Length: 267
Image 1 (cartoon, helix red, strand yellow):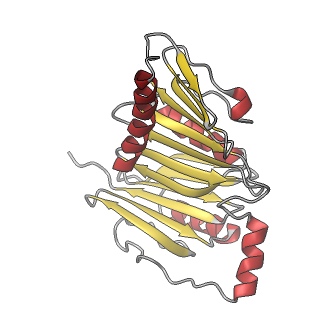
Image 2: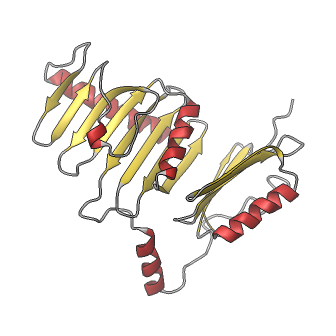
Image 3: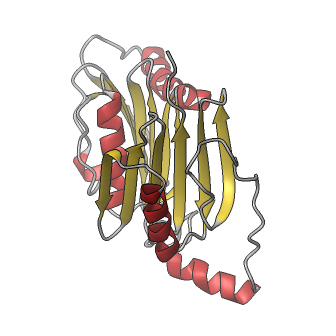
């Protein structure tokens, strides 16, 4: 997750260096256009509505906008965003149909990359310590992007035969009482000082996930429960009486899920 801060820093410093090299960097907003694109940096940078279709300006200060003519992509660097706003913005991207390709949460921040079935891509990064981040939008490239749509994935899987369901990492058994293994293919396990664990899975069926949430409730995860379900996602989070916390999340279209487990803090 240290890469999140690095990505943000590179984006912001690149713009600053390019503009200063051209003698354009001043306190107020300035920009430079080339045949390759445009860079705008300053204190009064506007949200590029036309270059970020369907994406609303987050509750933050826009400091840099970089447009790439070749790909049609647009990157925005922002500052002064709260962690709560960052999580809400990621949730809104999922609700808009951006299926998670990368969905990482760490003490350092957040990294989310999602794609629609038509080929549009969005990448969002956020760093907790600096309250800064980036949003990059890339339109569909001739109807084809680096991420394949759900129907194409299904066709490809059928053509290639049975899916390899071998877990990349084992489920963290006995890490948190009452949190069993979710049925699916484990693609990543992140353990932070044996205090919290995030498990990422693919090929998770909706019925299996619903049964999993029911099991969590039966096992005592009902304290301060927060459960939301719409046409795209199912999000469940709750504590047990000991203060242990679990958050299970499923994106229906891509069949990707995450299970976050956190042990209660002992005095």
